[in-house]
Image 1 (cartoon, one colour):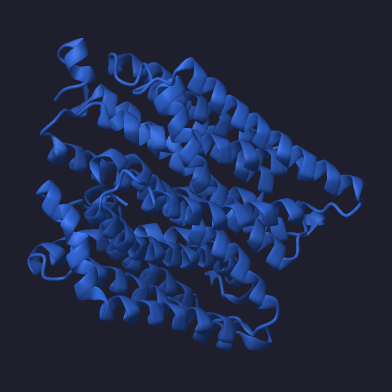
Image 2: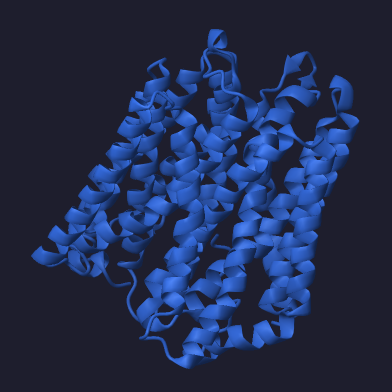
Length: 505
């Protein structure tokens, strides 16, 4: 293995793994613990009455806040990756990002609305800085010809994400719902602080990996980026000041602006890449076909946002959570999806290996969306039975989360694989960034469509979502042959297959 290990001689091993691997794994695990822990209770906290320690927001405003926050986290990965690659280097970017995330969580310990919003902003910025640079730093430890080893390592990181997503809601949900909401946020911050401390200590095993920027920005480039950031900040401050001066300022104006950003930025970036004069005709055709992958990813993330926001409220208000006299916290249902992913992923990997590549990428995307549509159809039935204030069996929600987990196992790995394999070599970073930005696009859509729950009966709302997903799946199936042919061009160019990447969502 190359990279840091080669720089420091024979690497010290912990439980059979290089010390650098253990450091990165634990950092990623604790970062995901903090993210999913806050993720599980944010909507429930936002709708809780002020006398119960919450923000007291109306349902649709709380759902819009959640969707906009998740979208901004994804959008922030683009400038965060640039800062790590051009200014700080991956190692310092990860460390600074982790510190900012922890500060954000600890800020949310303060029982004041302003502290909550400031904390969310810090967490979004820190996550945008840490996450892309964590993956980039991991790649520094593998040299040419070690793609299989790199993919296997990323697969282990995928497990860390699911383990954190499984455990975090149980901890923060119990503290937040049964003791104090702010203790739940603080527990997530403690997790991130532990991750930062062990990263700072363990980074001594990295050698020179990630110490300096991979492509250092020139002084003029750094100044230009600083000027653009200053102009953007000034524009935002001016708009907010004007809104406040008019006497019409509301927090939801900022949330709406963030939601609009998550909708506009991915589209502009995709169009900009597609029109880039450096792309030849074959590459432009592949990028155009890749738009279908991005659209499917965005639509699927719209369903994920429903599961993490609207379904949390359904669990709280309409689900029988009594278990032998103990009322299960509503946030605990958020652990169902990662549990099912851990159980289903090996089965899916076995099935794809048995298929021998006979199922094309568009077919897998269609299957993922069809499973998400089926989940929404089940929710339509659940909400119909919950009419009039009745409580329904938790098996309804368990079934929904199982279908969404199956959809994620099918759709997410092939989407990431397409991002790697289809991209022209000089555009690989931007193509991967587009993939995550389209996840933000889905989050932005999700933060807007939830406003329909105020004007539509919930059974009809979920049924419409199911029909949209089913229609998209049918469209992908109808176009599968032409799309598969154009998408395969990127794999033929690199000598790989489109389904090469393992379960590394």
